[in-house]
Amino acid sequence: MTDAPTLLFLHAHPDDESILTGASIARAKAVGARVIVAFATRGDAGETNQDLGGDTMGERREAEARAACTKLGVDRVLFLGFEDSGMADTETTKNPAAFCNADLDEVGARLSIALVNETVDAVIGYDRNGTYGHPDHIQVHRAAHHVAPMLHAPWVFDATYNRDYLQSLEESGYGEIDENFASPAGELTHFIEGTDVFAAKLDALTEHRSQAPEDMDLDAPETISGFAQQFGTEWYIATAVIPEADFGRFGAIFTPADEWSGAPPAV
Ligand SMILES: [Zn+2]
Image (cartoon, rainbow, N blue to C red; front, side, top):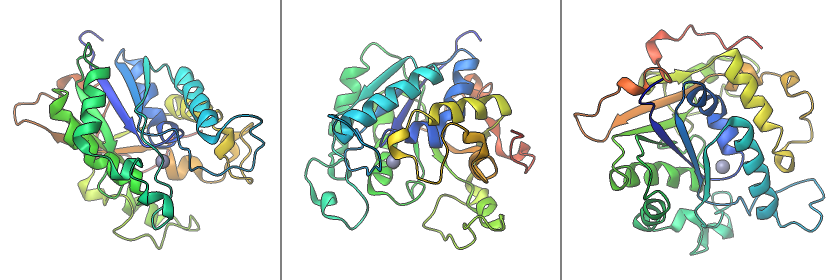
């Protein structure tokens, strides 16, 4: 692909890059795009049932994220140095250094300086619910839209889930989700899926051992019940920063939402 774009994925915590956008990163790399992943935090507030040895939570999760990004072919990994806000309504959200309390101009300044020699064509963040309401994820939504013009990036893509689709899955546990979770099908503009890129996503996920639930076997991730069905397709809401923004170079990566078959990728 000539003239392939540079995509900046802005993520809240290590493992978000694989869970929300692992297939997208794999697809972007497969068509020759340049991919930069910037993590707002190191996920210091994460919990684990693993022995971390001498590592702090942040050190372990940063190492896991770097390993996952290497597997996905990411060209550059940045850590922006904000602190994990923890879950909504907990004490850690009051920390002035927490990402949820960050000045968005400060986020833009850190990215602008780190990326001074890059031409960023799109910033990928999350939808207005931060997909599931985590304060750092909601802040990613705000930050992605705030920093895109500062980085001269003409497009913003909100990564999300298809709420209507999840609600329709029997026995998934998502039947009860409301308008505070992800985005309705009618707002989604593009998607990414495919057996090859889903395999890459699962492979990257296996690096995040500190965050794996006890009932998940990372050595056989394809066996996770329902994962392909629920998270095999990665959804986006594309927003042009300026009316003249040309979508052409993204056509090899993102497929228009109205072309979705309605079925998850075969695994
Ligand atoms: Zn997260």
